[in-house]
Each structure stands twice: as C-alpha cells, then as structure tokens.
Image (cartoon, rainbow, N blue to C red; front, side):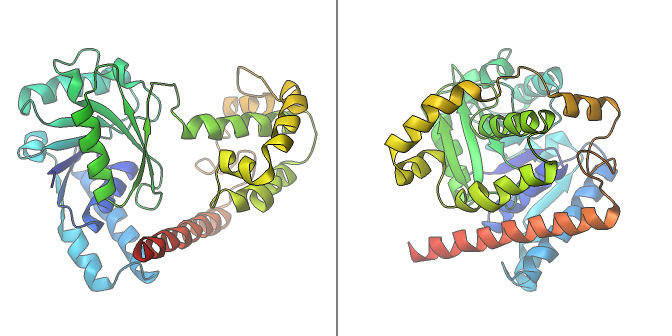
Length: 314
C-alpha cells in the first residue's frame, strides 16, 4: 500500500483525504497555516457527519476514518515517509512548479508526484522537473469525497510504472479512474461539460428560452439518462443511424463561440459570480443556497450508495 500525502488542505485537499481514509488508507494532509488546518478539520467533521447520517458508515466508523487523517503545517513532516504525493495547491503555474522543485530535493526518486490540476498539461507542469517520468495528473472532481471520477493524465515523459501506481491508488480509494492517452486541454470531463455550457449560453443569449427552461431541458431529460449511459453508449442505444443523421444537420448550427457569451461576460464583469456573491444567472439568497447545495449533496450520496451496492454484487 502506498503512503499518501496530500499537499493542500482546502476543499479538494481534505475531501481527497477523506476518500483515502474511508478506504482504510492512512493519509497526511499539509496546510499552509493553523487556520488552514482548522478549516480542513471543520470540513472533515461536517462531511463525516453528513455521510454517517446518510448511513454510508456508522458514527463509530466515522471516528476511525478521522483517525487515519493527520494534519500538519510542516511540509517536511507531511512527506517524510510518503511514497505517493498528491498536490492540491491553487491553479497558479509557477506556484506548482516551485513546489515540485522543492519536493524533488526532499523525497526519494521513486516517490510519485501527482497533481490535481483541472487544466494544466502534465508536460507543462513537469517541464522543470529532474525526473518528469514520475509525474502524473490525477484530476479529482468536486466534491472529491462523493464524485467517483478521477482523470489520470500522463505527460510526454510519464512512465508506465507511474501511471500504474496512480491507477492502483485510485482504485484502492474506490474511485473510477479513467486514463487519457494524450494531453488535451481541459481533459475529458471539462471538455464535455463546457461544450454543454457553451450551447446553454448561446441559447440564453439568443433568447431561445428562459434560463429556467434551458436548465430544465437538461435536468429532466439527458440529466436523467447520463448517470446510466454516457453520450456514446446513449447513441448506441438510440441507433447510430439516427444519431449520425441528426449530427449531420445539427452540428453546423451549434454554437462555435470562442469566448464567454454576452450574458456570462456581463455578469462576471459586474462581479455577479453566482452562489459565492449572492447573484449570478440566478439569485442566491442564503436559504436558497443552503437548500440547493443540500439537494445536490443528497443526490450525489444517492448515486454513491448505488455504486457501493453495485460493487458488493460484483
């Protein structure tokens, strides 16, 4: 079993740690200061309570899971015995590269260094590394303790052993890792997500329908199918002759915008950023925010329970 260290105690960092600890893997989490660790500790306690309340495990098991997570503000202590490091620091290229330079001076040559970046190509991140063969991207999806998908992206010099170790670690966490055979900006998940988001923006800007109805078109149709079948399997089930014919006449009319749409650009410029500022496409009063965030969390827990039951049947 790998000895895992997570560098970054924010939302994704402590959520990934929870996934590791839930799968009975001890993990050390590094935070930049005591406030960082206090926030992580509070986040862990809240998540553990919600998961126990939803019977993913018992309250007693939650205590044992928490015991497997060690928090520290010492980088050296965090990685002292690590064999697999997951970097979860802000998406600032030089910040990440400086950290890798520091790490390579502190850890053995066989320690895997992985990044949770959601967009940077691994070859770019590893460009200044002494041993880029031991670097790989492991992109967890938020919330990291509830979403199974992790995108594994190898760089030009990432070796097969590193990829294999990453896949093994993630499977041991009960995640669903997918492997990208080539470096592509945005990887797979974000490319699919933003293709849908671009079309939704174009429909809104064109006045084709209200924002509520555009969202409803997803949540009450393809959103219901996607938990079971992805786009390619859905096409197989619907008939490739049908999907090919529709593609041939519809693709030429789909949005091809190269920048954010008019409405999104205006909202962002006015600092109307959605839930975190109280207004975006929608109004986000505190009670509405709490209600929708809880509903989404409960839905994700529902699907996670189904995943666990399916695993037990296999």
